[in-house]
Amino acid sequence: MLTSLKRPKEDTAIQDRLESLAHAIRDKDIDAVMAHYAPDVVVFDVMPPLDVQSAADYRKNFERWFSSMIGPIDYEMNGLRISMSESHAFCHFVGHVIGTRKSGEKADYWVRVTSCFQKANGQWLVGHEHVSMPTTQ
Image (cartoon, rainbow, N blue to C red; front, side, top):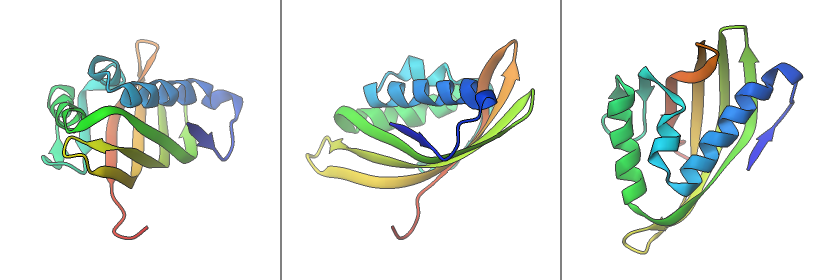
């Protein structure tokens, strides 16, 4: 579920991309997830490697995460804020992840996400992303 503090008309394309990305994460659909990222994306992620320099390398992080979970992942984006121009959009939100690890252990945690979308060939793709976990909740 995606919640936003405001939904101006010009933010619709980015909101649609984020909804699509969240849906792909929930379904653990790796190809659909990666369709949201530019080939040369730079990511600072929670899981090592912490500095990822391409979509191909970021795909490996998602593959490890998805394979560590049983069934779908409950993934919600809360407090979405978007700032955009004609060619770039910056957004940040707090994500809530709930699922079951292969060990049977329940996963229930929060992540902070900041993404920069770039518009290329009429399509919004993530060119930079920073994901972190708060030390307290």
